Amino acid sequence: MHEIEPFYEWCDFYVASEDRYSPFYGREYSEFELTHAIYNYLIHPQWDHFGSATLYLKLLMVNDEKQYAIIELIGEWNDTLYNDIMYLYQEVIEPLFDRGIIYYILIGENVLNFHADTSDYYEEWSDNLGDGWIVCLNFRKHLIDEFTNASIDFYMAMGGKFNELNWRAYSPDELFNKVNMLITKRLNP
Image 1 (cartoon, rainbow, N blue to C red):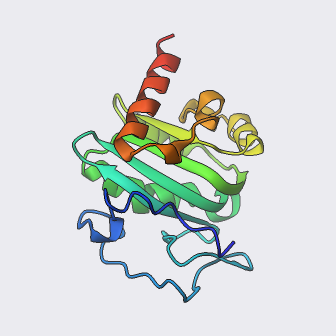
Image 2 (cartoon, one colour):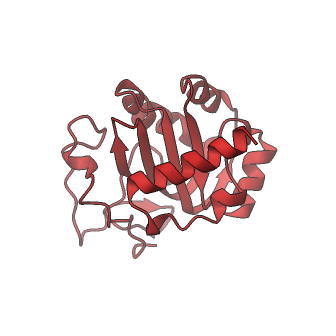
């Protein structure tokens, strides 16, 4: 797992550690020292720790003008044992809300498992979006099934065309526009 790096080709557009409003502002990264692990598996040092024992992320893009954020995830999303949604919501999403972000793209191709607990934080997140949305891109089928079984899919759009999107082929704004078009079509068929 230590060879899986966060997507770095958008660094010309945004770097969270250089954004003074980012929860990761001022972080310094090593290219060689592996300090974080998911269970017994070391992960690449560019991933950001936000309080979870098993889930890490990279804030790939924040656009204040268009009010969106793109977040890449890695690990196990475990609300049952580690309350990962609480950490994600309190440590990352709330600071983004404070700057007006209401559109969230979560990239989950490196999320291996999901274990549900309550939907309270998902509901609060959704309630605070106004006209915004949360879209999950490229999550594995068994994760989508788990989200659906826990009724989390009520708060986040996932599956279908959102699992067929080659997001790396787009710039951040192009990806946001594409996802916005897809979610608009889904909500207003």
